[in-house]
Image: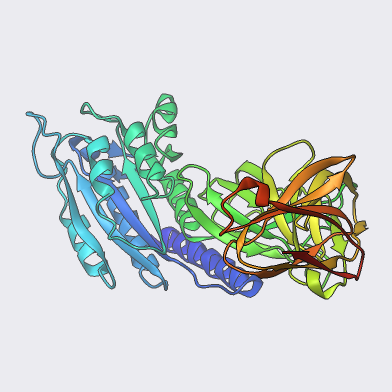
Length: 459
């Protein structure tokens, strides 16, 4: 008994030290951790195992562990039991019950139920897991964990693997833990798809395994994200990164990447029970999928994000709100709509831009290089003021190689309109709204110079 208490104290000390390190590393609101123990009280638990019956050994250690966990902040427990209500034969595959729902300070009830258990029935694992999904009250910021303690495999027609996968896919629970009591090693593959399987070959191993499971269930793990440049150095930073649950697709974390005061990527805290997909919101975004963490081990996550900067400049007051479209070279999808005179980083490569001037300026094959700012300047515009006797219908074209290219229609409800145009030769075609013949169309050619102003009279 003293050995067991020393072990429990060791586990709690490990949890305390780990949580202290995490708290010192990063301050954030910790989610509520809810642990549901799914306990096997089927008839086979009456069998002898080392120093006592399986039910006695498992019950005593669970009581001690639960008693210790109850002193921790931000943790709640629940207890579901199967195989304890109906004798076999006959086989009752509905013999499962949530004996102690989640609540604060329910440790007395958990211990009371465990001490009163008398193994009787069969082993409906799948059905118990299925109902366990509803044992967790709705919560937006909770870690829901199932710890299944069993000495046998599924005895009914259910599929524990399918049920477990469905619960994870729906984001109801994290990957469950399964502790096998005295099970043959051949059953490892049977439970591997259900969750993180630990085999307790004997009583001492059971205590050790239980401690490892509790430690993993309660502790987070440190990690750092290395955003690599073209030389493989972790120099890129100040970009958003989002972590998703690889299985359910649920967003779990969102951080702005930071280089700390020591010049290293800052440490973040991740849940080791989750396999992550990470999206780094560079332009274009970079994904790293299926990130697995080892509990208690600092993990380095690398992503290739070499970046350079693009800036298009023009100090004309008429272009203070000008924007331009950025696309990857020879691709149709718009990556970004960038403001003029505002530098923006892009993954190194070749890009095409379309500047929303009149007429639009298209520049292809812009090379973005590592840690280099590519700067482009566009000509200052001029102003064209269109004076109309009455409102009507008109279109403006740019003259190029003796051909007209449409750039804009005039407003149909005004008799005066001023447009900001790039330097060049233009052609305008206009007909008054009241004119009832095509021949009344008025046309004119005019030139725009940088910084100049032109009146176009269409009477």
